[in-house]
Length: 404
Image: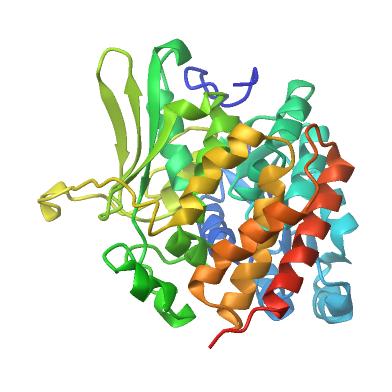
């Protein structure tokens, strides 16, 4: 683990004054829950920047409610609507990727909650790290796409990264007070998604409506589909490798259908520490915003007597081949994970629009892996080019796939 970031036995620097938060992806599930935590703790936090991709009306409503200094819409064609609605309130407005990156490094921002979906989270996070801002990281693709690059940036920055994903927050909490040398394995739990008990032939024919019926969590469409394919678990293994600086062989996934244990750490003495809680993202969001301090009332309290059975299963990689892409990406390195992510974003969107089958998501990704040039030591521009090329090749594959 890079110094000053995410060491399990580091004492968190406690907040002595109100923290200004830039909420990137404010209209999404994580963004809204983050704003809920902020609004319920006005003595601790203020939302000073809000951003959204295209949901301009929702961004306007949130800006009117939370009164940030600045609101940013990524889609520049929607800027006039945003400006005209918020100018009378004295709220600054901006649009485009460059404006979002500038907002992440603004002087009045103390912490950036990166709650955007997919590759779009990388650029503002990089700018925030270069500016020395603390990061509450909900955008897993930042480390999936460019983990080695981000880790290099962190070595020369005062930024600290606090994980928001429930699994990585759980691991972070379990590592508090422990030596990294004592860790035997990180155990990332997975619900198994909506298709855990389905046969392979039935999974192949699953519709978007089927895949969006997650049994435990309420999430955005993209992450819900990633959960159904279990690619989200592959991404979480990659992310854990970069967050906690642990060898890939020491990270495994286990299916835990109840989603009460959010992840575990096994130690060399045979002991295992687990973090438990109800399936509610407010707890890990609050833990990150609070710099590993507990914020009372962040989540509902877990009543263990309601859960007579907590069960665990080995994940079925034959039924969910996307899970195998984690160790492929980590073993090959370079821009491999960037290719996987770019192709997956195209494939998931196509599946949600009924253009390809559920099984075609994996096939689209492997097609891109076969046709995008491998770069062993990519820099930032290489990641940008790789993402563009992976998406182009995936889109061509989708266009030539006939879903009946």
